[in-house]
Image (cartoon, rainbow, N blue to C red):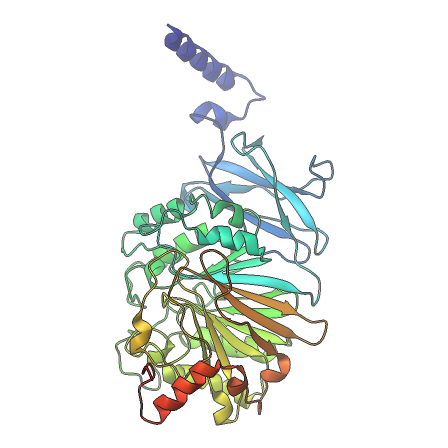
Length: 470
């Protein structure tokens, strides 16, 4: 008996909303209340601003509010951002004029209304001004179709990083239908263990093949521009490419460290093309941008963020191992211009790896490649068929994993790296890099390699088997 009465009340409320001038017009046109469908997600902060992404339930103006007080008595507001069908109802907001290294509560007003389905504010921090200790987590390969729980994000939350980097294969669309990519972005953002991470920890991302289109996708991808538009809709990076060079690459400076996020797909030549001079993963404009930015950087650490690994491990795959001329061109450039402090982080391999390219043997310094993969997929055992230049730590394949870099400056610039498994345990002894390790003439890999890995390497170089059981 109560159902007709409720329907009558709803009809009356809708008519009243349409006739009252002080009720937002969109409320009369939308079933339900304006609200967040996915998100919010914190984007890249600066020392005086925070950024937030959200996807909302209709064509609305969205405003971000931030305050140091929970009651928002000292609230500041962003300019309104329109979310509509052209952005798949996604909105990106930024508030400036904030204090550095300060915690702020934030909330969203959607069509002028607070979201009644998310009534409590969230909290995040602005970046420090100048050099300061911080922690950055990273990983790759989150496959919703394999793992709908994704326990690793509870580990990320417990590690309390200041930044979280997603290094590609953030979804597994494996499709040239743009709607398939959009659907999986939405579904991935609904992972319960992921939500508290992205709502508090600034999250930055690049793509790899499975979120670009199909497996091993390259510049011939027929939907590369649609993929790029979707990526821009669903991530809150500080920038995307250059005015004359579209893509997902950008530089991000945080607390005294420069991160160079690379686009390894939009301009990529086919991986199975002969590895000859001129074959490119980055494309000419992105590569020139990277060289210019590296040469201009004065940061003690300069981190190259790549979807695929830098070492020679994956021969025959689609990592830098099949773009060695371009890779070595970059390494030579770093050496010849005496650019100090460069190392890399990567993903894709479904293994935790810590490899090194011993560039000290060519007059430079040793290049370390820190790989975390997968965040949520099946670990792989392809390492038995692979041979990088140098493995610093044994390959980790027992569980999903996430990498953690800890930067400090009190006793000179220092980075300590650990890889953490599904229960949060560190799987190796830390790798420690100092600024002195990363300058021409420094040869460090023999001091940092595990004794067992050194024994394996020397046996292999002598003509034996790397994985022989003695």
